[in-house]
Image (cartoon, rainbow, N blue to C red; front, side, top):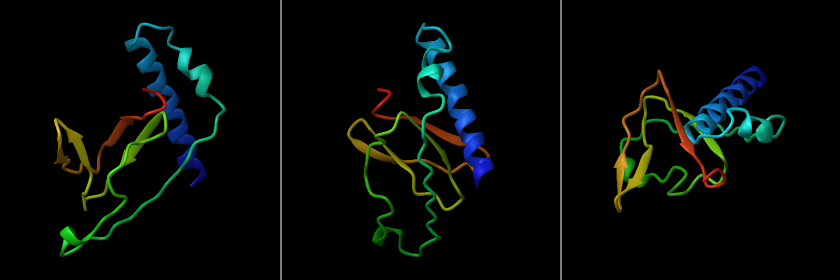
Length: 105
């Protein structure tokens, strides 16, 4: 668990470097701000359900953090709100979903 947390912290700092470069600021701009700060590790598991219309999961929300790194399982359930409606995201267990949260925005 500790090794995974450290790997995710390093990944998030690398993503912050890429975001900085894409925004035209020095690549270390955000890394210097976020390096050494605390992260929140949240582990949710939702087993397959025969009646997904009766489940809630975490419910609709915005991510209040700066960056969310999500690894999905093959059960699915992630949705994004675009153009006034919710769209299901097909899970890819070989990838991470990266979401820029409210703090960074």
